[in-house]
Image (cartoon, rainbow, N blue to C red; front, top):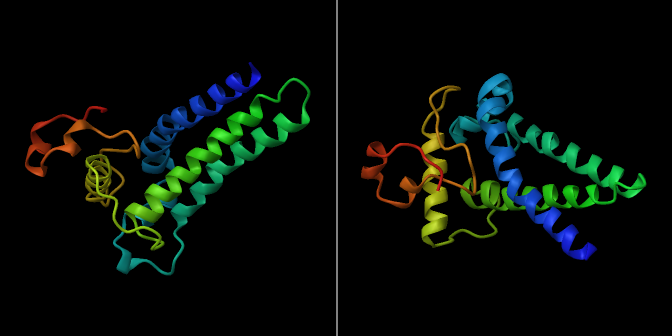
Length: 164
């Protein structure tokens, strides 16, 4: 029974992280921490080197994950928190593979995923990056994107931003 509980905790954390990441992206990255995120919205030819200040957000999410492992493995009665840490780590790996490898091509591990879902993610993220300023962007999620991005670009302006 514990295996089921720990699996549910892990999967719920992975799913919940999409919404944590959405809120962090909208309210922190495009808010008070824009100074870290701004260089991510600049065209690649303006960047100085491989790393961006935006990469600091790795730490923002790695610290709670690491703390969950440390507390879960060392404090009696808190072992379940280990699986929260695992869920955050899994979401981080998914985010890295989709965002940094697939969308932004920071590594050339796989170049072409071709499905309606992968095209929707690319369209939504591209639309988000069309705005290079702190304000005015939409589509802050990574894995959950508005239905309009699965249609033709000409339909985007006529549809409000709603979650898929």
